[in-house]
Amino acid sequence: MAQANSNAGGVDNTYRRKWNREEYLERAREREQEEEEGHFKSKSKGPPVQRKPLKHRDFEVDLNSRLGKTQVVTPIAPLSQQAGYYCGVCECVVKDSANYLDHINGKKHQRALGMSMRVERASLQQVQERFEVLKKRKVTSGFTEQDLDARILKQQQEEEEQKRLRRERKREKKKEKAVEENAEEGDPDVAAMMGFGGFRASKK
Image (tube, rainbow, N blue to C red):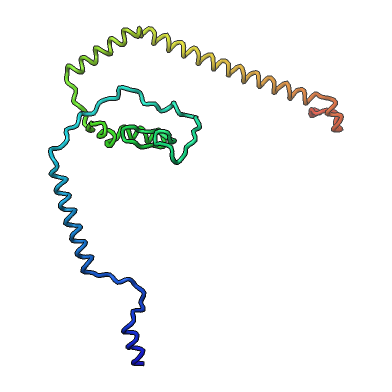
């Protein structure tokens, strides 16, 4: 029994990995120190970047050009040729239009364009200039209130015409149904086949 105990004490039969606590504690301290030094370095890189205020888009977002089209996608294809909406600024692919709009309106995309999410406050002169531009656009398009009234009247007339056509269709269907019912009730051949004198109830 004593011999077995001495053998058990001399042989490591636990098959478990042994960890040196002191070694790993030292490694953890070194890693924390490096992280702190790197954190302070990144903070003291230089002055903060001054970004431009947010501006409206001067182009129309294309969401419909690839709608309903079939595309073969391979694993080695570049990002711009993969299925979905490709953003060339951030070099990423977004799978659907809603997420693509969220992406191009989001902070990450705007920062990549060099803009912040703050909107520039418009001055009185800018507002007046904008009003002038809109007035000129209205004059050049030739759109007047009379045109608007004519369009509304035309639309109302079209709606009335559609309602009238629907009513006529319903009347025609009712007439056809009534004719069919009368024909079935008065058909002597069908009545003879079934052994009746007629389909109508006799009044006594």
